[in-house]
Image (cartoon, rainbow, N blue to C red; front, side, top):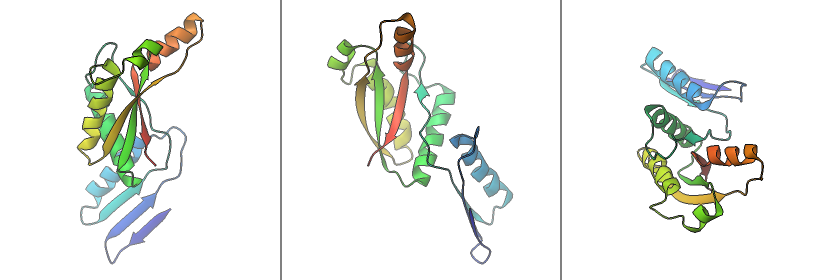
Length: 157
């Protein structure tokens, strides 16, 4: 849907979910429209979807340049959706990790790194750790370890 007001030189587009088109693409669309029509206020509202996971390298709490860009794109989408507060969840690999989850834990430090990026856009975050029991198969344990290197952002409210 589009709401175009030539008198105010404003165009607002509300995007529908489109297979294969992620949130970063909608942000790039808005940026491209703003460059091509500098005298106009351009807004693109992306469809409300589940946010992609923010992945980290094993044993690292550093955001890669790509993940910093992703966090910025997610902050943009959250702003467009009117979300000012989120919960950032670190997936934990073991029950023991869940019992000792605090500011020093790797998952917490990762979530804090994502929270710091979102804070640059004025989005506040709470941090939580989440443990999901894995099955006994090697595939289940491998999936649990992969999940432990990911952070999910959940809009609050």
